[in-house]
Figure 1 (cartoon, rainbow, N blue to C red):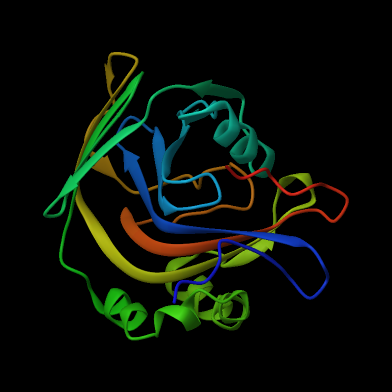
Figure 2 (cartoon, helix red, strand yellow):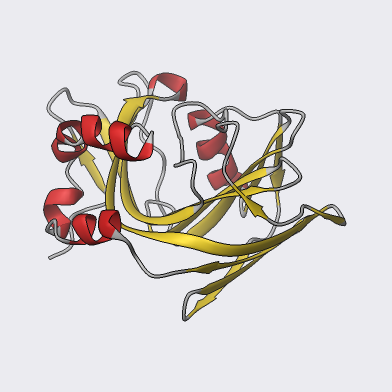
Length: 220
């Protein structure tokens, strides 16, 4: 049985759950891209793109006003655009069309970290308590945080279930070729969310606890 995507924690805070994957990609131009592809969420399936330019300008590309409002309330951006976001993935190759961004990347074979994550039962990996327990190892191995405070009084937990290296990527933004694949550095500055320095795709369950004084996000 699939766990519900809306729940309530012990402190009474509304919790929203997002199941999908996150890809973190750096480019030789200095632009870094973080793609979130959510197969199941309180908003239905959707994909959003967080992009930070070399000069530090942070952009959110989201497919609807509702998702843009939620993501921009959780993270920090200098610019928010509502645009169609299309994703096609097949046999390790992913193509993303989110005007003004065109992105293509390829994933390789999973390594030891991916094998270790896949060995953890999915229901356990999705629990916020597990994200807290593995936080020290995630910081040491990948340089990322698995839980912490976000915007608008929210709190997040990231439960990773798999990791694949990104071995190839090409991106064009506003007609500019962003260059070849590179490490995700400097680290992106969207807020709590982070991504490993080495480009990768991580299967994840993200749980977001809303601020107690705020009403739950309406779900249709």
